[in-house]
Length: 344
Image 1 (cartoon, rainbow, N blue to C red):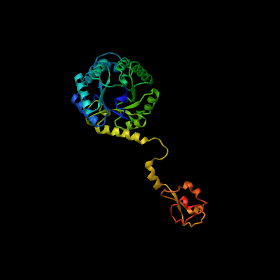
Image 2: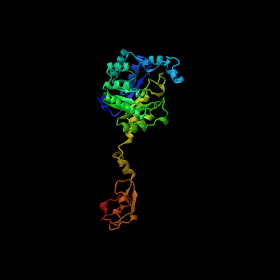
Image 3: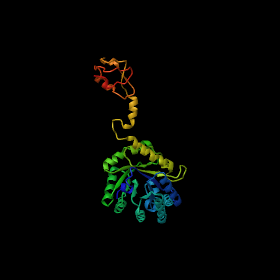
Image 4: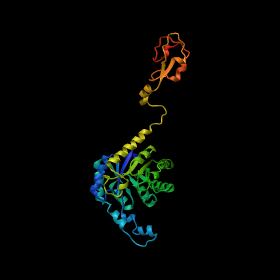
């Protein structure tokens, strides 16, 4: 099973990153699933983790003092409020099924992987923070389920190793997401051409995990070939949640989907010739050859007898040499359209 099979070969895949924006409230999580589905999301993605397995209690001391001077549990306590029990995740999965959308999650530790396996999620998301967590990647590989891999704070070598680790342990399909791990992402840091580089370097589909504050970057990413999009989702612009600054509300999410589709539609097929839709415009706007004055039978045609005028429904001016020097066979009224059968 590959990612495209899971999403029934849709041309675009739009993932609403509910993440931790539910604030740890199961009712809010289910409301967000319904709102995201109604906004056009093909999937809702959460973040599943055990805070004590993610953070060291010495983390603040290590970051500020470079040593394990003191313990601080504030970050662990904060993220503990954003977790769900297995029973709550069962309800989330049921809400997604009822809404008609796909539920899956980013996984950050072994215990969370076990939980998600019990829920039988169809694929996994790997956050860019976990790309070098090769023991976890190896375990994810053994599930033999597809993976969407974010590449935000990753080097080329780290991405390569992660792909190799996943593949050799059984991962059947991998898609990469370009992202910039800044919240929000300044426009000048977007580096959207990296989408092309990722696709060409690793031979995998490359999409976009968008941390900007609107949908303009997503539309540009679509024009560069991205077809998988992940965007943080919120219930409303004034809804208080951890990732509010990089989240879209339902109206904005739908606008993003529309903008991406329009961007791709605008690319066209690259044909140099104008298409059939412009045929009527061409007829009215281009020029044909007309009689500049009355031309009697037997008159030898000179350039002074011909004028190029609209509409372009007859002989184009580029072919006037095929008429000059010929003799008129019939009366040709001034300002009338010239036809080849009028001459011999």
